[in-house]
Image 1 (cartoon, helix red, strand yellow):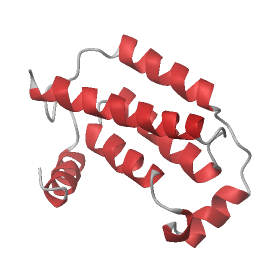
Image 2 (cartoon, one colour; image 1 turned 90 degrees about the horizontal axis):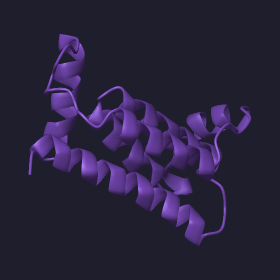
Image 3 (cartoon, one colour; image 1 turned 180 degrees about the horizontal axis):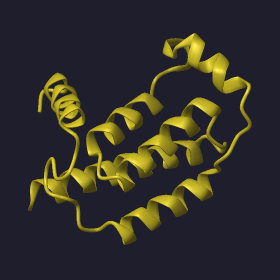
Image 4 (cartoon, one colour; image 1 turned 90 degrees about the vertical axis):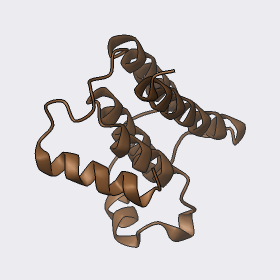
Length: 124
C-alpha cells in the first residue's frame, strides 16, 4: 500500500479512536481535546499529516500534563465543536480530500523543514 495512503488511514483511525474514547466516557470533548481535534482536522484538510499527528497525540495528554497557560486561555473561550460535528468534519475531509498531495508539494520550505524535524523526532 502507498505510504501516504497508509499514513492517512492511520491518522483517520487515530482520530476515530479519540472520538470513540469520548463516547466510552459518555462525554463531549473538553476545550483542550476539542482544540486538538479541530486543529488535527484542519491539518488533515490542508494536507499536513505531521501536524495532524502532533495534535492527535496532544489530545491524549493527561490533564495534569497540559500547559497551564494554554488551559487558562482555552477556559475563557466557548466550546465550538461537539463529537458529532468533529465526526462529520472527518467524514467530509475523507470524502473531499481522498487524494493526498505528493510529499512536500507546494509547501513553503520552512514548513517542510518543520515537518521533517517533527517526523525525525518521532523516529520516522
